[in-house]
Length: 533
Ligand code: KIV
Ligand code: ZN
Image (cartoon, rainbow, N blue to C red; front, side):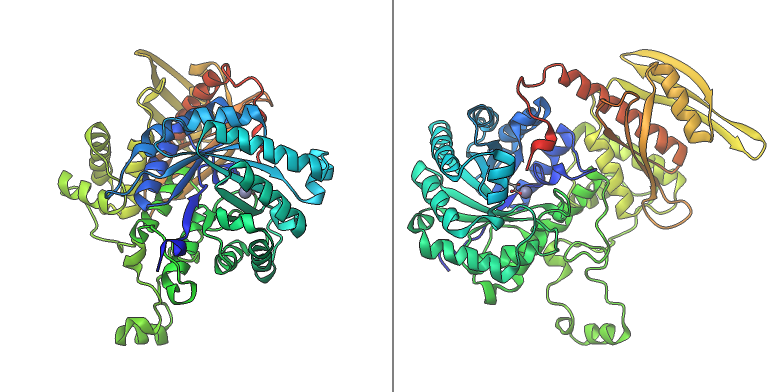
């Protein structure tokens, strides 16, 4: 197998993935995901869309600095890409953001389908061709590595696609991406389009041809793999398949198809498949969005054999019903159950096995919380440990508001009341309030302390594991009460659901304060997030 048979894995979890509702991530969360993507061994990390907001710029810059210089097992650090429309201001901002990376990339795009050119861009095909040429050249004057995407490529007329690709390659793009932006293509048709490109555009052979498929009709993975069969050598995808609308092609499914059916595809990747499951779990913690149980590769039931006849076959020979092993994707089973007598070493070791490498202050915090939980709850399971690790990992030590005390009462003949103590920059505040229930009362007491009530848009309470003594995780989406305010998410975990709720409320409050602080310094011509493709 030669270098031409290597499929590059371009991860866009932090850009396209982050655009999906409920998946926005804070800087610290993006950094942690970025580190894990590097451990997973992806070739390219698209870290964000730097001109879209100051926050996006800062996270791309931080990822470029930290992850873009991170070597794992002697491999080169991943390429860090920043997205930019085919406009000078966007391209400059992206170049600045990815600069600290050892291998920076600008990923610029322009729509090429008749409907997008006429209705959205109001540009003629000739103007589009000229813009591609000028802007790719401009990007090349700033960085060596430029990728050009033909937005809505799946609905672009094939002869025009050939002209655009030729122009982009001649202008210096090393990677050409054909996205099925609206998830409209069918596998044979999409494969035919890539075949046509290679047959009619000699310049296509001088670049790496990439694909980026959306899952509106559930065909993102099938379309991407069909394109690989025709010579595409970069696939753009996301962990757990998150992304705009129905999502992107799922990275774990793409990779495990290439690995499991190497006989069919004849291609390799540099992904360490044992990191797939930990990466998926980390993303679930960060976004609070669970993966469906029957999801391929990383769903809770992906390796569960329920039917008697299957279990019988598995006992006789695993390969009767198992085409890949759970271990190969990093599924470590439920492992040992921990309890209050478990020590720090065992705690840290299990967290490492689960993909969380905590040290120093974060480990101390997580271990202290573990002991508190183990005192209240007989058995502490993997999912509990992961929730505690995520809590320690993503708690911003610089956050302004801290919840130091909560007492709540409720019952059939009591008015639900809560008393809350909070600290802010070493000052302590106490207040109490009544509410519809103890959670509402706690939120109102916090509002009285901050003097700036929040509007709650979504409140999700889930039990992390089974059993009556399970820890509860609350994910909450809030904004200020005016309609222009940003919406942010907060999370809290505890065996006491009122406390978990109050923690989530305070973490959202801190996130909102942080965003508002950054907002004052927004980039001058920053487009709204909604203008991202
Ligand atoms: O879906 C799309 O077309 C995109 C491009 C920017 C690659 O996300
Ligand atoms: Zn996309």
